[in-house]
Image (cartoon, rainbow, N blue to C red; front, side, top):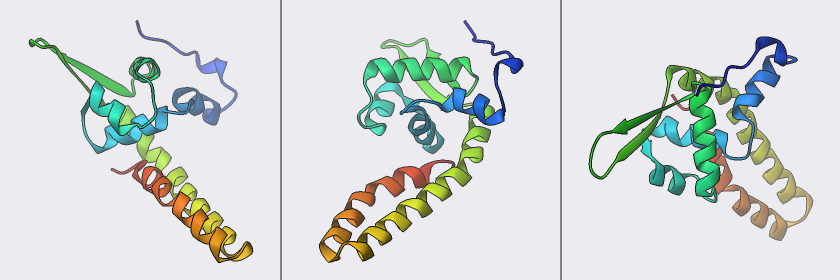
Length: 142
C-alpha cells in the first residue's frame, strides 16, 4: 500500500524532505544503496548498528515514498534486492551539499579540539572523527 502525502500537510520543502529522510538510519540506508544494489543482509551489515526490525521498517517507508525499489525474484531460496529509484538518486544528489557541510564541520571540530585542549585531546578527537567523515562523505555520491 502506497502512502500518499498531502502537499498542504507540510510547512515548507525542508519539512517535506525531513519527513522522507527523518530518523537515525534512513540517510545511511540511502548512502549504502547509492554505492550499489543490496540484499537485506548486505544492507544490515553496511548500516552498522541498525536492527532488522528498524531496517525493515525504514526500507518499507522509503519504498512507499518512491525512494527505494524492492525487487523480489521468484527463486528458491527467495531473493530480494533493494536499489534507489531515480527519485532516490535525486534525493542523494540533494543531500550531497549537506554531506560536504558535515565533513567541513567535523574536520573543523577536530582541529578546534586539537588546538584548544592540548595534544592528547587533539589526537583523541581526530581519531574519533576518522570513521565518521567516510560515512558522511559517501552520502550523495553519484
